[in-house]
Length: 478
Image 1 (cartoon, one colour):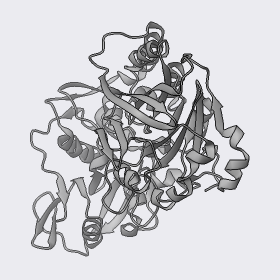
Image 2: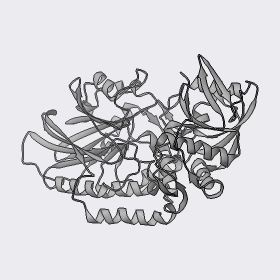
Image 3: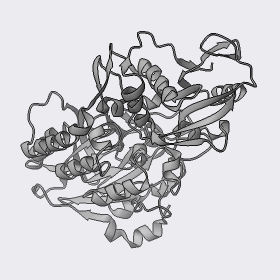
Image 4: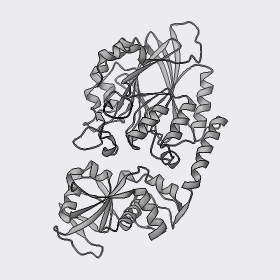
C-alpha cells in the first residue's frame, strides 16, 4: 500500500530497538527463541503460564514473543468488557509481546474499538495488504524490524481476504470495515521479496493470518512458502491447526488455537541464515508453573465480569452440541422477533451448551460476535434463491426445508407446501445479508438489539427451557 520508497526513507522509524535480554558471547552465530500464539480468541487463563515460560527463557537466551492474529471474539470477559478487548491487550502487554499481525476477528468490535486497543498496545501491529488511511484506525506498518542482541529480525504481516464473494475483505462483518481497503496477499508479496536485503536483516519472517492451505483462490501459508523462498520462516494463524512442516525449504509453523498451546521455535542463526531450528508445541493446560502476579490480574478480570456474566437465565435439559444449539438459536431469534422464519450461519454458533443452568456467559460464548438483528419480507422464491445461490449451510426455524432432486421444497411447520409467491417475514443476524447482499432486499427492519441480546430476552421472557434431543434444522443445497 504505502510506497517502498517512503518505507526506505523512514527505515529508522521502522526498527524497534528492543531491550537486550541476554548478552550472547561474541560470535558469528546467535541463538534466538521465538514464542508465539495464534487464534487465541479472547482466552486469558494461560497467559500466566506464558509469562512464566517467557521470563525463564529470557534469562538464558534472546526472546521474541509474537501473535499470528485473532486475539478477540470468544471470551465474554474480553468481548463484553466495557472497553471491549482491553483485558486481552493488557495481558499481552504484561507478558511482553513484541509484535502481532492483524487477524480477521480483530475487526469484530468495529473501527473505533480497534483504534483504541491498538493505541493501548505496547507491541507492534503489522499488515502489508491493508489500507486504513480513511479509517480512524492507525495505519499498521507493512513490516517491522526488531533488533535484539546484534540480531535484526524483520517481520512481514499479511491477512486473509476471503470474507465475501466478489469482494476483497477478511472474514469479518462487512459493515464493520466500511472505511478500510484490502488487497489480496498474493498481489502484494512481490513488493517485499527484497526487504531482508534492504533492512540488512539476519532473519526475514512472515507473520501471517492466511491459513494453512488455500482453495486455489486465496494465498495460503503453504503457497506463500512456494512463492517467496526469500523468507526464513512463516508463523501463521487462521486454520486453528498444528503446523510444523517445511515447504520449499521454508519452515511453516502454527500453534492450534484458544491459547491451549504455546509455539516455541529455537533458532541458530549464522551469516544471516538459519543453521538449525527446533519446534516445540507446549501444552499450556498441562504446564504446572505460572506467574503469580499475572494470574492475579486474570482473576481480577474474571471476578469483575462474573457479576454480569454468571446471571442464570434458563435451563438446559441436556447437553447440546453445536448443531443442537443452532436449532435453539434460530427458534429463539424467531420467537424474539415474532417472524415466520429465521436463519443462522453455522460459523456463527461457536460453542456447545452444557446440561444445567444457562448463564449469560454461555450465550455470549456460543454467540460472541455482537451481530445486529434485522427483519426482511421475502418470498419463498427469494428464500430458495438465497439458499441455492450462496451454497452455504444454515440452521433454520419456522419452516421445513428439503431438497428433491434439484428443487428446494419449502413447507410450513404443519407440512403444507408453500408456493413460491408466498411472502414470509425472516429474522436474521445482519452479518448474513451483509455478506450475501445480492439475495436480500435493500432495506430491512433493523432491530435495536444484538442476536445475543435477543436470545437472552427469549430465555428470560418467552421460554427458559432448552431441550433439543434431536437436531434436524440444518439445510445446505447440494
